[in-house]
Image (cartoon, rainbow, N blue to C red; front, side, top):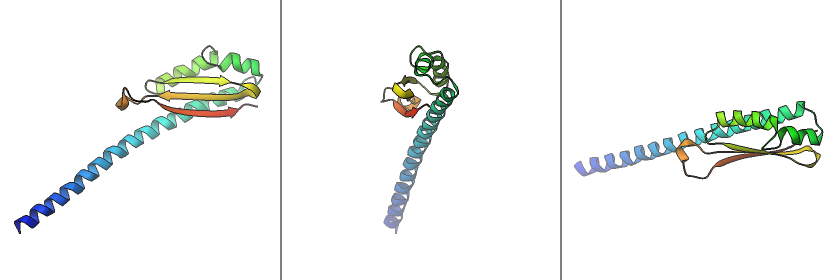
Length: 124
């Protein structure tokens, strides 16, 4: 009877350890999802600003191309304030095809690979 009790406690403790491990993974995934959604909102904010500006290719490149566009530098300040250890690039190509790349490194992953969010849009 004592052996049966010990085996039951062992099986129960293994189940509890598995649930604790699952909980820690789910908390990490929720944090990653929050950073991805913030990157998407920041990118869509920039694209919205581009859509209401002058649509000529030369003006778009002068205002929003990284690293020197005035619209880009203002937006990059917001990105740096929102996402941890972040960087971003904006490339305005032919026909106003815009590629926005946002990279960040969560605090729990110092020294790891940075996460990134890439959006391609055409501003007409």
